[in-house]
Length: 173
Length: 81
Image (cartoon, rainbow over all chains, first blue to last red; front, top):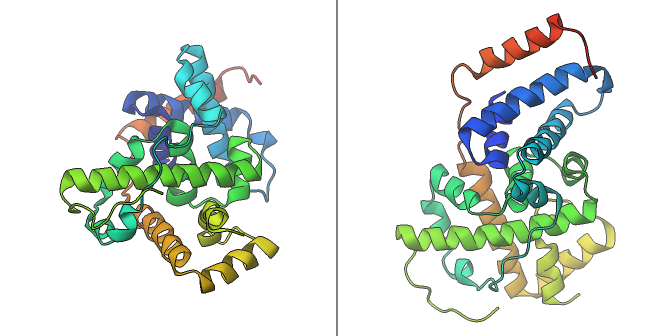
């Protein structure tokens, strides 16, 4: 339940909505439990219900950003990723959990959810494809863009927090 | 494969999600290209930072009881869908 709530926070970006999403997802899982095939991945099944619940939830509230954000491709970061982390990888050691969480919160929802599923929940790509109902190749490219986006956010955060000084060199990617 | 293509595949490579020829091509490229080797190292270290440092926020107290309550009500009521 705690894991699902944490994932719901990533989808909802708002603690009250996250609670509602988890309750609704559990209720749907209970009502549809006969559709779960024993021997298949229960965790992936219930996460898929959570994702579908969040899409329905925001559709009902006419808050389109979440709907399109989860089902459509998020734009790749507009700025090219400079090689700043390459020169300052030790900055990563200074991060504490909340810092990473703040950087994650800065990602668009479609990018945040894919990082959350891959790196926080430890799902394999084929499981993420099944949860988000997107092709395997899309998982691969979305995670690539999402992590690139996240590295930029981590780097910006490290600079703001003073974890990293000015880069020794900055060149165009 | 050029360096740009290698970097596009870097995430799947460090996640052990690349198979067959793609995996071999990335592996063979990075033995000869120090810049891409450094890139792969950066991708892996940034990923591991996320994997190891994020502390999951626990669900608020009372959520479990609320879930039990809605499920119990559904169990007691007429079954739908």
